[in-house]
Amino acid sequence: MTSLSKSKLWEKMQEYYNNIGPEAWQEEVVPLQISSNKNLARAYANIILAQINDWHMHNPQTNEPFYIIEIGAGHGKFSYYVLKCLQEFFPNFNLPLNSIKFIVTDVAEKNIEMCEQHPAFKDFINQGVVDFAIFNAMDDKEIKLRHSGQTIKQGDFTKPIFMLSNYLFDSLAHDAFQVRDKKLHEVQIKIDSDADWEEYFAKAKFSYEYLPVNTDYYEDPVLNQILTSYEKDLDDNTFMIPIGGIDCVNELKKFTSAHLVLLLADKGHANIALFDELNEPDITEHGSVSLMVNFDALKRYFLACKGEAMLMANTSVDFQVACYCTEPKHPIPHTKHAFMQELSGASPQDIVDLCYYNDEVSDFYKNLDQMLAILNLTMWDPNIFHDFSEMILDKIEEEDISIEQDAALLHGMQIVWDYFFKLEKTADLPFALGSIYYALDEYELAIKFYKLSIDEFGINADNLYNLAITYQAMDDDPTARDYAKQTLNLDPEYTAATDLLAELA
Ligand SMILES: C[S@@+](CC[C@H](N)C(=O)[O-])C[C@H]1O[C@@H](n2cnc3c(N)ncnc32)[C@H](O)[C@@H]1O
Image (cartoon, rainbow, N blue to C red; front, side, top):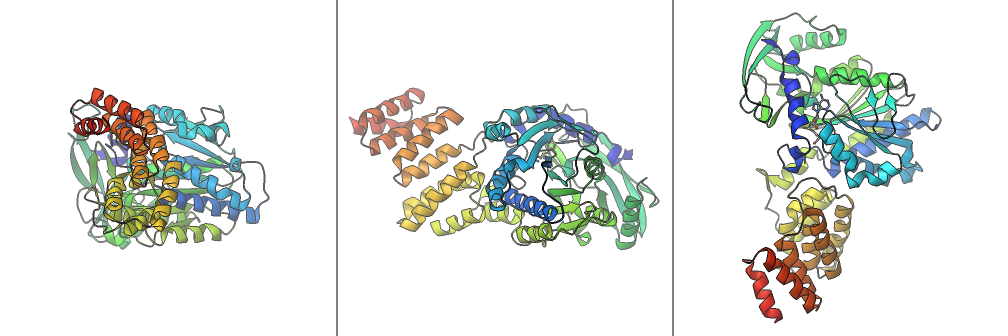
């Protein structure tokens, strides 16, 4: 038996991510929509911008960039969305994009390799705005950037730094405790699994022991203060201390003489009334494993260190977003206001709940106007648009589409494509766009996107056949015939292509 934070769980977790690499998301093994979407990226970008404005109210503009460091970025899609939003917002404040440096980091070499070769980052790399690094949040004290060769280390900066971490703290070391009859106990763990990395967690058996401990458990007096307050406040509850995340914040904050702003989104509890009862710690398996992050303990930690803690108005959902700040030397009203504006209404969980039901796309929208409204609410998130595209097509066929709806779709589809970040193997966004352009009689655009579908996701009978019918609609029968024949060469059973050839003959 050992403390949870000292168990091999975390090392095995890193082994899992190191081995699986980007396949975790390309094959949709690890979920990402709730933590990597346009709404959340816009929220983070607005909070970052507000923090920069707060800084400039009290400090002169200098050439030193603001460093935005995403830890555990994994696939890089969220980094890209945040960069795109900042690029959109900065001109409103006369800020050049090179006033920031965005560092995409992860523990897994394969992930960082994929990110730095991803075409979406090319322009940002050329502008010197983005760089990449391998960084282990539980070990490393410096960050060596792969493009510039710069090493970020203690005392390098004088401006606030931003630490972004989505779905990461749930993968970093935790300690587990219980308060039983007003007495603190540590939950110790034993893990048995003889499987290799792929099935290690699926086959793992966890056993636990509950040992009485004193509230001077840690070397850090602030953590002990939190244990003391929980011993007093809780009645027969289990709680976690996200020690790995806290240690990482304490290392990163040394990079600057100013403060650190942590933007955190994760599964977790922000309300002690919702802490589990005296159950075993909630370790959820999904290829790897994850734990519920204690947002309340983080709030207590930052506040005890004279920092700031901004939490969502809705503390009852399982997916929480927060902005924590180590001790700032000046007030930060813009940051607080931006957080409130972005996260006091619909949360990322609300958007997912509106769009999906039991992991399937919600099919309760009655007409195209309702679907347009949902897409507006998601900021035309490319993945959600992709998942809704079949239903949009059905509605276009069922309804007499108005000029306004047509214009709204054409406008939204431009935004969707602007934010395209190729990742999931089955999310052929260009094909979805091509199909809707075809349904809207925008044949040139349909052809452009069906061809992009071939370039990005490979040739298949569907994109070939759809090219055939689009050329037919444009009265280009020879080309239509050619594509119909290519379809049948690939799939002789594709009866729609046989029928089309007969019709064209
Ligand atoms: C659940 S994924 C989250 C990826 C992405 N941030 C998102 O929201 O979809 C966890 C990520 O954290 C990385 N990771 C795990 N342990 C880490 C550690 N000790 N230091 C840095 N990254 C780590 C994994 O490689 C993986 O990319």
